[in-house]
Figure 1: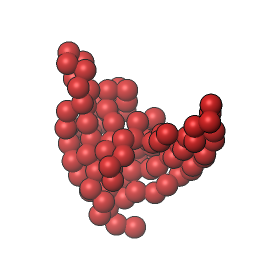
Figure 2 (figure 1 turned 90 degrees about the vertical axis):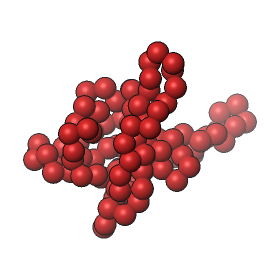
Figure 3 (figure 1 turned 90 degrees about the horizontal axis):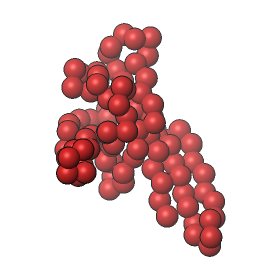
Figure 4 (figure 1 turned 180 degrees about the vertical axis):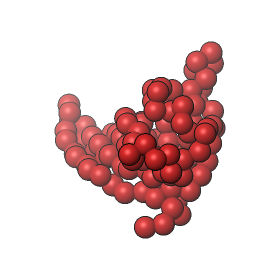
Length: 102
């Protein structure tokens, strides 16, 4: 697969509590899993995606503070759960992120 889908990383500004654009790039995107359930008569969908991007210095800080960053893709907000640097080769990073819709 090619890295041909545009994603945007956002960073939380802790002083204003607003999300600001941090970095945008092309990514290879794969859906890892999904589930749907009902809670108090509300249909909730949770999907997990893998976003594979080229490793650059600006993204190397994210694995140490995932709660301060998120990914925007296709009009959805994805909360980063994990980041994998396969065999620590520093070539590509895979961001595992969840999107919950109600």
